[in-house]
Image (cartoon, rainbow, N blue to C red):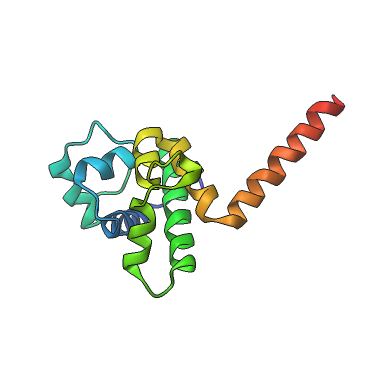
Length: 143
């Protein structure tokens, strides 16, 4: 994601991200947790939901937005005809997460949890991360 967006563009991004999180049927507290905004009161979430106020433009929020959008896109690709299946995948215990649900991994682990879930559901993203890690390892072994 770019480092700075116009206020108008950030309002659009904010509305879309909150919509994705609403589709996951989360509480206001869970949404704020996932966005890394514990200092915001749950009652103020409506300003973001209505796209009256943009999400903060910080590197961590951008990173979280990127993962949320990536997860939402991958779930739509995996389950193109079923909102119910997308929600079920997020809430069903998964063997790769030690029988925890993907949603609980996200809530418990923050950015790292978002990335772990995205790697699991978005194979293209997982391959890109794997390729980058392999390249870094090769570079480090040569140095």
